[in-house]
Image (cartoon, rainbow, N blue to C red; front, side):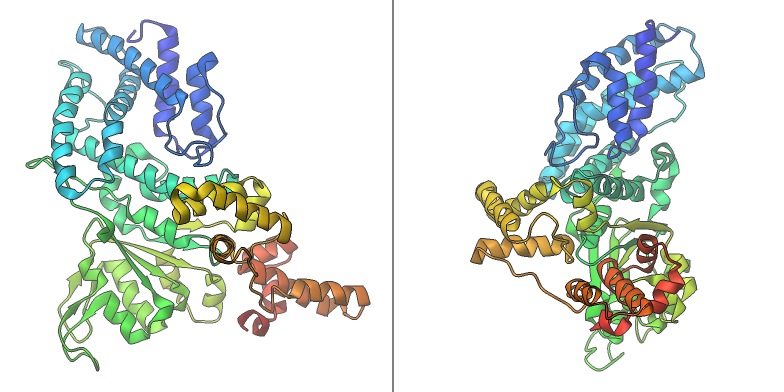
Length: 507
């Protein structure tokens, strides 16, 4: 047997699951508990900023220490030529990969924020030592590892894991299960549900998968898109031993609702001189500027003109496009992420969204939860979110500002306030209290509908059909999603669509 102690074999089995599970779901913490037994230090059921800002926990160090010990003993036995099963070799490889990651993890964390030239110098030095460790643990004479990792690719994957963890962990706040599921969904969009397969070949194909982010306005859809874009795989150049250059140029956002159709086409595909009034010179669009590691983010995709949908559909299907006024076919090499707060099923029903376009968009779906959902699942998240916003605004004075804002909200809005503007509204509330020591929530016809409906119910002036119409409109105004409204009211989606007062919604 490869593992001379049954406890070591059991530990390796659990660590194999832990290494490849989604770190943002309860499964990760359950694996830690199973691996450490009595040494496990109790933590929140999911990894989140509120509980642990930098991800440094006693359990991580304990797992690393024991993994080092078990791997070193097993490595020596393999070098001695001990006979063992394919399963044991696989468990050893998984544990060795875990050890290799944590040997460079601290440096990788620093690399994420370093400028290009400094990052290159540190990468070269770190990779040199990494190759030595890789060779000792995974290139044992006479032993064939099942995955056949190449050190440069594995190092690049480790760097991607570190960047992705940082982008997801720090930007999606909250200890609630809806927030945890959102973090986990982003992680899957980056690595898929099977990281082993991702490392083998899927890392090359993931840019071909379009991600569609849906959810109410103000729930952080652009943050989700940015986290995905800034976590793309960046290869290690075997000649220079440096990683592909990167920074915010990996993320190319375009708000479709803010531009005319002609300008959208120009921004997306570029144009030749004279293609339209004001086109004074040739210009490359985002589809051309974006390289194989980058992402074009199309916000408010539900607002896109059907004629442009056809052109964008060609990009999604064939990865090709042409500049406005040009006949030369060019190739798009990056990834597309789209977002909307509209009900795209309704858009297909009314003909404003092509079905073939929609089904090309939704290869990968993420739905952002409303702030109301998050606070219903975990009321204490309000404190953490306010503190998160205050840190961005006030730096060292974040805590007293957060305390002031939280106190004001409790006195004036109450714990049951619905936050119809979601996280964006909470941000504005913090800014308003910072500047004026007060915040006045905005109102709309649908948001005012609750008190008005209550008054009419009290007076008994509504027919049953009027009541259903008013209530469907009120709930849809909060969710902005027909499926979610139908789920809450336990009605058929078509019934809800027929009853909603669309004039009130669009006012």
